[in-house]
Picture 1 (cartoon, one colour):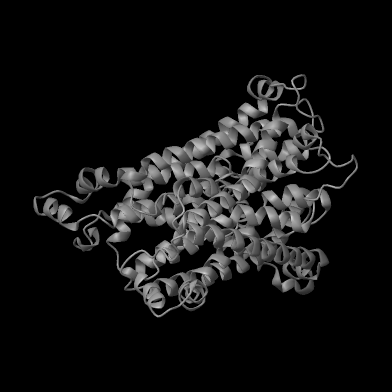
Picture 2 (cartoon, one colour; picture 1 turned 60 degrees about the vertical axis):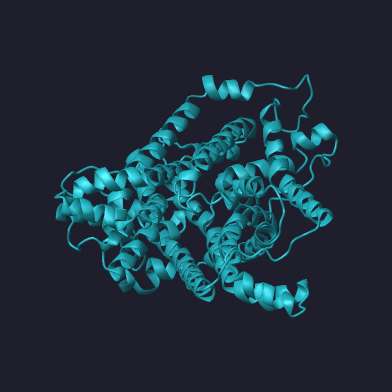
Length: 567
């Protein structure tokens, strides 16, 4: 391993620069948020903390957040566990395609997910009107409810449960399952006595990460909850920021800390049970395939899985496409009503669309490029550090990604609303504040593939170059970089894929002229132009599928687990 190289054999200026960047991007915003939330405590009941705690809307939003997040977690567990068990423990065919399609909802932006489902149900659904199945005009939209929010968040976060639980299932000790069968245990006893006890920690970890993701989701509760005046903590913060007023930043800082505390508790639970699951599975001697199904049962399971995917993925996307090629919502699709006007307007007449596309590409591309350049020396230095220091720095890097995006957005506002020292310029209201927030949030995504790849290198290669007189930078560029280049590119593509459609952070940081694609879709739907929003969303989905396909093609050169949807 590279970590075997002589400690301290790295340029001190490089260490200082990278550590300074990590402190600035990861630690400083969180500390600034904490200071603001606890400010003015000397005012007693008039302090921002006490004002927020006395406000009934705070506790109602907290209750709504806990309810929708819990219900969404249950839905995610049901879907994720079904696919994880079916694709990990049985002999179904077409695993690669099933995993790819099941992962799509997680990669599609939440506002696009919400819009596609809104176009699928209700009296104004162009798809239902085309089929003659639309409910009567004036009928309520069933998704404008707590249960509708929970359903969509459950579908979107089910892939997280799948990934976490599958990591436990594919490492089940095959000999224990075979021993149970030799002793006469039926399939039910194998499930209860072997599989469930060994995967229980993975299941708890999966539930924790699904809950944290639902708690910080903004796009779905905003598009489904705000029209029904149903607020959760992220949308309550958005409402406060929209209203401005005296002391609003201090109050939203308190609300952000409430979300952050719940999220960090969930992350700690997830990490604890992931470690426990890994400990339990030490010593396995092969990948388990607990249930070899006969042809009839295998085909039945495959049909059921594809039908489920058709319901939760294909049907909403078809409804989204249909909505983008009709003149208005509520109009059925026929040869006479088919039109590409929304796409023409998006590409030629809508200045804000081009600007948002340009801003998103610049922000996502710039973030991906910067983090690609940073991830290589950072991973290289981390592997050469003492394990405790490496763990501390890695945890610091993961904080902005673990916290809900709305918390990071408020922290960035507090940090950059005042002019920067010495430079006398303010980043607030510019693309620069979005760029900084993206760097902080997605650094962990770019780093993990490079760490995984660099950790597999043979340390003797670098040691030989060191004995031949090659300095640290030369070894880094001429030996390490060529070997980990695919992982660096994969990390950059993952950052680009995630950042180009980002909404949760951008919703609070954007300003006029600095819109992003995620904000544009949200604003268009909120303003009633759902047909144009659907057209832009279709383009976004095509871009997501294309980038995921490109990453899949790169998978053969990457360590296992870097591309999450590759089996």
